[in-house]
Length: 453
Image (tube, rainbow, N blue to C red):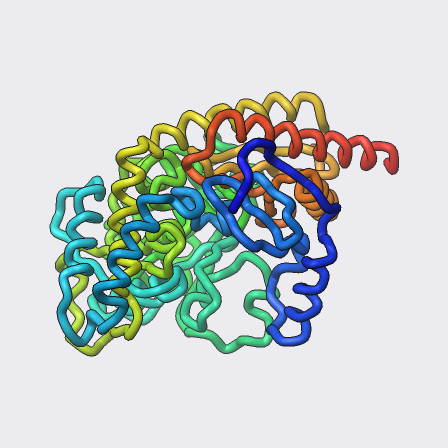
């Protein structure tokens, strides 16, 4: 299916003739999506960390299918497990009847949770559905109407989830009014602090601001059900909070009886070198949303909450396809693979190598403004000027386009940040080859930008 002798392997300058034909049909029949923002790759097949397009070009996957394929593509153990399950049962709906797969998966997830308090689980299909469930669960338990969200956040595009999403205006444009009662506050984006302060001299003003200028001025804290936050912002630009931030935010939530809800849809399931990104700061959320990489590419999401919080009545929330038997088996197998192949350790090891590479490259090129990340969730923010930090959005798009044409699939997030997120199974050999191509593209674009100025 996919060659392994020489990768990447560009046999036809992309997009090739078959790709162009497929794109023409796509544009005729399908709703416009976000694809033009990146580049027109038409994927036909994939294996491991290699993706093949319809014209036979083979690429190193550095975005994991939007951070879903944590265990790589077509893992043999996963394929065998789901095939055996499909022969037994594909669907019957766990919210109306019983079958063992959902409870078995909950038990397996419980084993990797770092917190020993009793927990309950609810399974859905997508990250947005998990966010919707988390919000409804918090509302039901607290009987409170309001929430705090964060600027730069991405939680999905369904009407409840998009009420919290605040990454790009197009995600909210023309959809007002949304779910009422969501107040947004600044995320701890230290490289672009909205308060023009610097860590650690700032004293975590972004947390104190929530209390002094929001909760004490216009949002009654006794009406706030929860704060919904990504431990590391994904779509927002792969922003990593400073150490100590989450401890302080947890303390604020506890002070006012506000639930801390973490969205680990992108950052969870080993992506950052730990099962869940929030573990890096030793803080336990009250509710956590999971998705993307949880089931090796099969549709599944979940929320996990302190047992006493998930106290809603039967019928308060439900789903037909959530907790599908095939997806549940895929998730249990994914957990086994991550453990057996020591992928948390590999994510940490390869991530440290990648961070060093880009930090070293930063000394050579002015285009790189900031490098940040944990594990294999790394952001490389490109700027036109390091003093003004003007986002290099066009340049970032040019970098990912050139990388694609040379054989690496990498995309952006935020205004101009390269999103480095290969499968957790990535080898050092593939990492080095991909970095060589991305680095070469950055240097080319940097040189061209300097000539213009």
